[in-house]
Length: 277
Length: 82
Image (cartoon, rainbow over all chains, first blue to last red; front, side, top):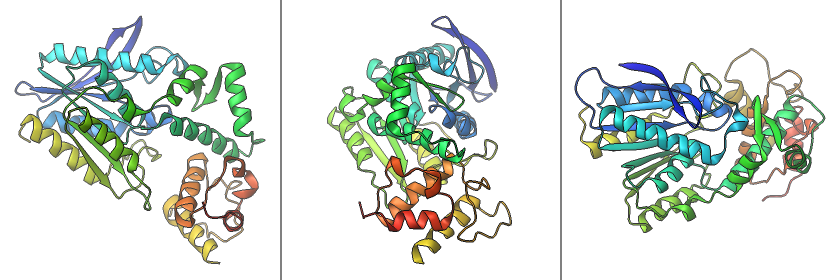
């Protein structure tokens, strides 16, 4: 069963979609946390397909659009790191009460994975985390966003600004046109302060972290994150696939998600919640 | 020559993926002909950094450095290993 609906959060109507098997009662739920900006649109089908697969395996799932995305009210620039976290917690509560679930996991991709991890720090009753290529260093991610903007200008053959000029625009105007919306100074500042391994305090357990590795790129940051969860007393697993990035594949209709990560995530979830496929 | 061929192979196989019949010669105008968009440029940067051990600084993200395979190769060849 797939059920689109709206729910209220902080004076905004947010759009969500529930997926659940037609028969039986789900014993666990999964809330999906989407990436930032254009990556959200480009990975919609990854989420749709995985949510439906989880639903067929006996999980209840909730995908939702944060404020300013998709069918939800507001603009991209309304979003702050804090608002993404609070919307995620509201979605988790909604899913939990809707199906009277004992266990709700948060699943996120890239920025969404980081939001999921930060939300779990505030909600000890989150039963587990599935983090697909989380943003571990916000500072590096903020640099990446500015570099993306520079590449955009280059591709348009515009008069290419420098990084310093873009940051100055962000500072003086409070926002920068980004992915058809705006990246705001508060969001940029909040992103820059993320240091996920340092922010892990809760023994949220279990945690599944997956990422990809291209051309011998280092994944040490993910090791650091997994170790942080273990040091906090939780259990955490890391799966690394030799694959290309899947969150910027431009076909929104032909989602690409590495089979290895897809299967590993599903096996991990099914094994821990003992839900038959 | 090796650098140029490596970059050309990457663009032809990983980015263009046979989406048109363009024969990618070294001077084919990649930006002008919309072969590379902003995401592709980031991919090219990630590729050359990993493949050739260089660091492409933000101030190197200029149209003239990505105008063609030859231009990208020239930029890479002039960089010191990271």
